[in-house]
Length: 183
Ligand code: 16G
Image (cartoon, rainbow, N blue to C red; front, side):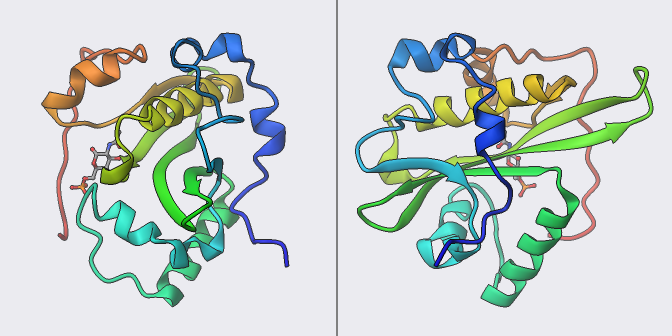
């Protein structure tokens, strides 16, 4: 049985050349070769069973996510066509060990444009030091550029600023403001 995927990654990833991913190249890691027993791929509906929610809980509060709720949200993301959620799976353990999302927004400004956001970057605590964060962030950033985004942004805590600067992110003249309506 083939797994239900969020989107078809092949035509997207085939647009990326090694030369456009300098940090990955330097670290000898790529979406084709993410590491021993590891696979870089789009989110699949069966990832709920592979520790996906537990992984996200290492980034932030996830609350209660039943499988039904996961499937409903997966289908909504799929229908939107603008959520590129990539994961890294440990094929040996059937475990999702890395995640990042490129979300693309359509705007009327800049002669009608696309704007990207990198969201929910998380690498499993037991898989640190394998450069999976670099793989996810650099690949999704360059993918956003290839898709035609005029800019890509992300939110992060102040301690993560030096990390994201490595990929070319800068603290802009604008600040991030936020109003929370629920926890
Ligand atoms: C980080 C994430 C952001 C996520 C937030 C969760 C990156 C680059 N940034 O800022 O995407 O939404 O954490 O915080 O991955 P919250 O659950 O408190 O909103």
